[in-house]
Length: 85
Image 1 (cartoon, rainbow, N blue to C red):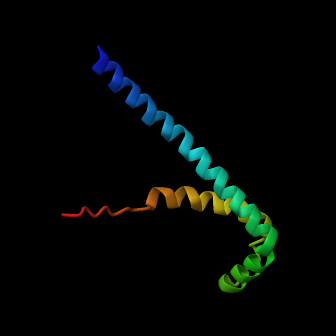
Image 2: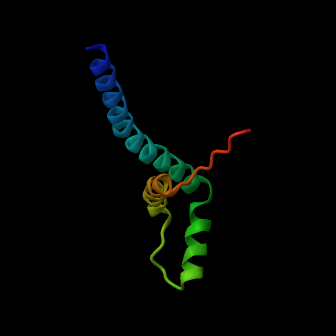
């Protein structure tokens, strides 16, 4: 019985981690975007407009873009573990 409860508890902990990690990733990405927008938003928007030869990038879009990129970056991240002999 204890083994089943331990397995069930571990499954609930993993599910809870997935439920909490995604919103926190979005929140931290959005906050980072707000900070970037506050300090150098127009510089980034003008640079992107110059790079892509368009006028569609505005500083108001930076927080949502950084939140989206933080979520995508979390899924695309790889880690390498090296064990000592």
